[in-house]
Length: 366
Image (cartoon, rainbow, N blue to C red):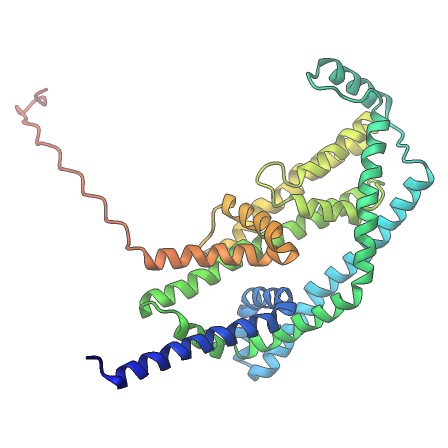
């Protein structure tokens, strides 16, 4: 016969778990409108925590968090908002100009000849007029961008509010980071040694996957936009943003923007500017990835490039814009949790020693 007191304890425990799940569900819905802003705040807090730690040695924790948040607003948020504002203006001007010109694009004669040769050899049917094909693609792109631009303008107030929430959350994450990490330690149901490993490796993976990826993308986008603007291309900010977007691709990367631009210059007969763009793209833009990424990843646990690409694209497909942050964070956390839970691989057996070769004093016996 079961003890009534044990039965009451079980019921009380089940009710406690049910209440925790219900309150947690309601809390999630309360936080859901600000999830993207808080996710960005967490990533910025991880990336900027070394600066906050250095400032903690000289000033109070509150002043340190204030200075670090101000640095984030000036160096990260400010340029991002400026780029977004200029991008909207450039895209609006391009759409209006294309609409007024009937989406006609003057195509260089050499490029048209190359297109005709490609058309005769291609097994797939291609449009006869390259200008018409480009104009048709621009018409579709302009319609899509115009619709998105309108929605961005309508949600500008919400964007500013989310930006304020992100900075507000960043301040408290930096100021109270030790208390929050201690709460996380208590919530992880794994041994202490593995728990510390999970926390540190998750931090390294998030900084490596998100911080380095976005830093390299921003650098290559800025360099490409600057180069195309100086070489006379229209809408350099737009092309810089496109370069930043494609730089996360495992194949092609920033070359998907500056190589077609160089081909257009060569086809137009402007060989000098074409050579300058090729040299700048190969030496400066290409080396930005090879120099900046190792510098940011030095001494950190890294994540495979394929996993970074899948986490970024899959995160955007499943969660929208917030997936750019949440995708790598979720994959990085999953990797470290699996490594902490699974047993370590058995060490490889030592190779058997080679048999001794008898020696006749002059030559080894074969």
